[in-house]
Length: 504
Image (cartoon, rainbow, N blue to C red; front, side, top):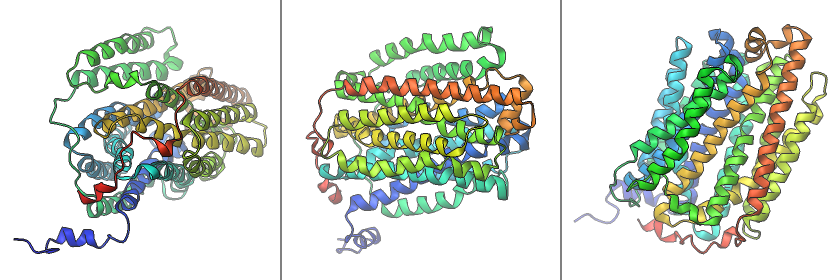
């Protein structure tokens, strides 16, 4: 018979009894959010430095970003289903290990092909972390504090976005491109060790059910076709056979994917979840908002380097208002979500971000001063922050605990698919009118060395791309406002209290 507290693991847990378990878990997930967010945003600023080192083509440059996003979008849904079966904590720890190892290997990549390969591996680790972060928080937090917990989680996303651009710019400018990836390693090691120490193994919420591999493959092919068409349309021409074929494949495979999911015994996407109006509309608003959310920082950082001749570190500092806006809005949204329904808060955030994108588009010119750009970025970020917390809480509060893994997988998949479309669409629109040589210079951040005509063309393309993104958030306003009249999120009755989870 084991004496009380003779188990080292039990003694270790007792050390933290003074702090509620859900707050300890939040420190673990916060490190995960930070490392994934930093990893995702640093390359947006440092891309020209990496492109110049490898003498990468425009297509290779875009796929340094798109390969990571595509793998994330495809794997998040798959891992969401897997988490319900094998356990979220186990997959979360695995994700930390993979992301850390891939970051180390990225820094020794000998060529672009190897770098893109390890970006995909890195995305596997990031997807494992992202898929389980929100679900773990939702499982352990009491219902009355869920909005606060998720709000702090979103605030950490904004902190990562706040740190990412200057960190990426600093390393690219001072230490070289390798450190754009290597800085993830110590953060990842700390996160893995702390997660091993804190996380408890929770009971599995799903049975050992088969994975929907056909659905995963079809979705991956569909997204790949779409991304190939968007990324190559400006290079080969939008009427070229490969580009048209890629887009056709993407469109044709969407109903095929839905057919597979409808007939599968254990689908990746439980289509019955979308019978809930709140869930369906919140996810559609999430996707439309995500189409606009990733590209503004990338476009502005690329514009500042290619058109204004800024150093990466200076460009990284100048795009900070979008992250500051998100950081300020996130805790405000978390607090207000206990008093106001998602329909009000999320829609207000979308209105704000739409206005910010329009202001940014009007002021992204070769001769414009910086303050109007900063105002547009700040408005955009504040709107994103005001939208995210209540909308995420709305999605997670509409499903039972047993389905939160797959529900969060759907949310994350749609969000990351939006990021992929956002980046591919913005890069395609902003560079579509440039000559091949000028396009290469734009990605390398040296376009200002060419003619003024090329600079003007790229600036016009960036403004057009931002207006398209603004149109996406405008569409999201309509969707968000027309969701059901939900109660304030802090009082969602269908999220079971989790105080008892500390006894597991």
